[in-house]
Amino acid sequence: MEQNIESTIKEKIYVIPLRKKTINTARYKRSKKAINEIKKFIARHLKIYDKDYKKIKIDVFLNEYIWKRGARKPPAKVKVKTIEEDNSIKVELVDLPKDLLFKKQRLEKRGMKIQDNLKKKETLEEKERKEEEKKEEIKETEEKKEELEKKKAAVIKSTQQFERATAKMKKHLTKQDKQPKRQRRMALQK
Image 1 (cartoon, one colour):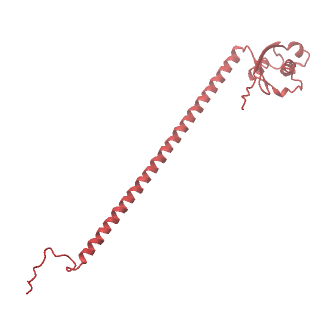
Image 2: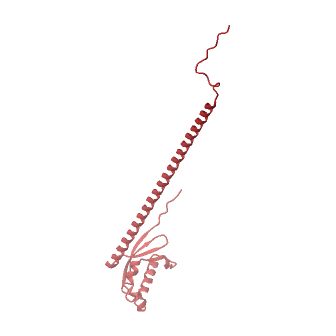
Image 3: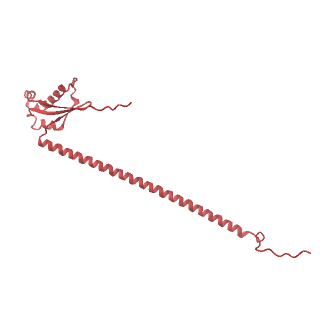
C-alpha cells in the first residue's frame, strides 16, 4: 500500500520589533543586526531548538525593505509572514511598499515571459521532432517503394529472359520435330 505523504505548509504572521535590539549596536551595523534579530525571533517562535539559522530563508523584498534606508536606519518594526515547509522556513514581508510591490510585479512578469518563452521553445522543439519523424517516415516509405519497384523490374526482366530463351529453343528445333500442319497422304498398300 502506497501512502501519499503531503508536505505540511504552515503560515503565520508576526510583527517583529527591531528598535530595542538595534539601538544599542554601532550605527553602521544596525541593518545587519536587524536581519539577525529577525532570524532569532523566528527561530524562537517557531521552536527551532538547534538554532540552525540556515533553515530560515529571508525573502529578497524583506531584505531590501530592511536595507532601504541604508545600514544606519533600519525600520523600527516589521510585519512578516512565515511559510514553514519540510526542512526550511521562508520569511516574507506582508505589506510591501509601492516601490517594492512594483519590483515584485515586474519580476513576476519577467518570470512569466521566461516561462512563456520556454513553453514556446518546447513546442517548437516538439514540432521539429514531429517534422523530422515525418521526414524519416517519408524516406522509409520511398525506400520501400523503390525496393518494390526494383523487385517488379527484376521479375519482369527475368520473365522476359525466360521468354527469349524459350523462343530461341523453338527456333532451333528441326522441322521433323515439329508437327506438320496436316497429315500427308500415304499410298494405299496392296
